[in-house]
Image 1: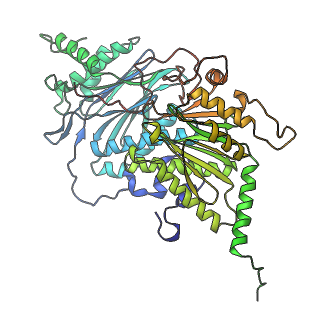
Image 2: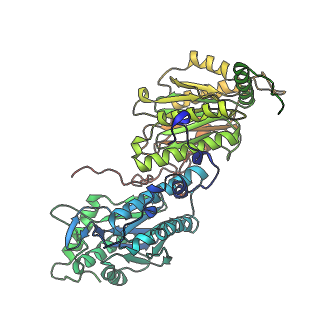
Image 3: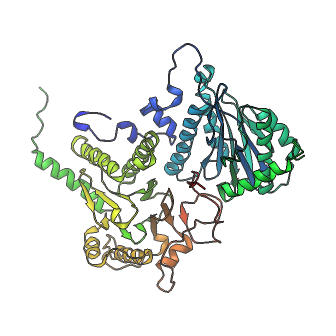
Length: 275
Length: 280
């Protein structure tokens, strides 16, 4: 804020006509708040907590996204109950893999970006519009990604025009690709994707897809040390968001406990799980 | 030597500016803001569905304005930017109506004394609290003065008779339906300029812009009220006197309550954050 006679008044950038993008406004007025504007000292890559596996799959009227709860730092578990799946706005969910600190900051920025647009313009962004805003945030993080602080999100939402769930994946350079049926990102994604191919099929209900994504996360945790499986002792379940015409709903702990217990029970003596 | 300007005393200069701004504001229609049992209601005579006089600023804060549209729209956008930036860099709970009202007051004050023309606007910044005692309503005028109002505000057009009537007839704890009927009746008595001036009019739902800050909603509390719900609230025969707790079921933006369609699935969460879960 300025000092002197005008102290306390809204700075000129606030009153200037311009874009309805919060990120662009912050970039002009307070660039130090944007993760992408930070300059890193040259040198070795630093070690920071990493989030791991996110899976997402569509059902007849929407899309389900789930993430495990583990963050790792090298061979250590940095956090065992971290949330990595968030609601972007009322009709979208975003899951993150990669450097946890920057990823969560990006998600927070993305949430404000969507709400800011909604308030300024008085209307919702289209689903592609939201996916592209996220792409531009990832793109501007390329410098940090090259120093090892990469973030790879997965975006899923309910398309109000087409009335179906859609999935968008990203690469570190900000490339945005629409995926069909299901997708997974993060260190355990290879195993999760294999499981999704075998267990998911068209026409499943939302409840069945919740069970499918939990199954896929279980397979990821089975073979990837950085992905956390369901922790029955501590009652830590995956984060599961269901996005449909009613908006985003996070599946409650009691409902998830039953799904997880069913998956574990079905694997007794049959470690490969459902197929 | 350049031509010598005429001397104008500072008193005269400020008076001229104030007169200019006041005239501009009085030309429009009035806006009434008043507390009701579950929050704060904003009622504006505004036939436009797109150019709003009442808008959401943040979770529990709304903005209402009269005067020149381009000037208050500019202030509204600045307010949304202020609130979103503050909430982003601190926390959502650190965004307050008082902070925003101060920033607006400084801005309006500076424009009034330093620019060639003052803003022809009067605005209200209101924040709904956990109880009616915690509600805050700030009225800001063109010269940057702030007033902390208790319970109700009328501004723009011929606001004075409305304000006088509200002093007698408003009381805390009115239902939404009663508060709305009172506001609409008083707005109809506004002796507007033009051929119909001075007569009592009955305003219909199509001429009104109505919004509430509903203290019982989680997170974003601002909702516009329209469609069948507004008709029902205004009607003397219909017993509806309160806004439903559930948002409209139709997919889309849920900033407007119309009371049409069956209620949304209880388990759906229209807010963008995961609800707090207590320990099991």
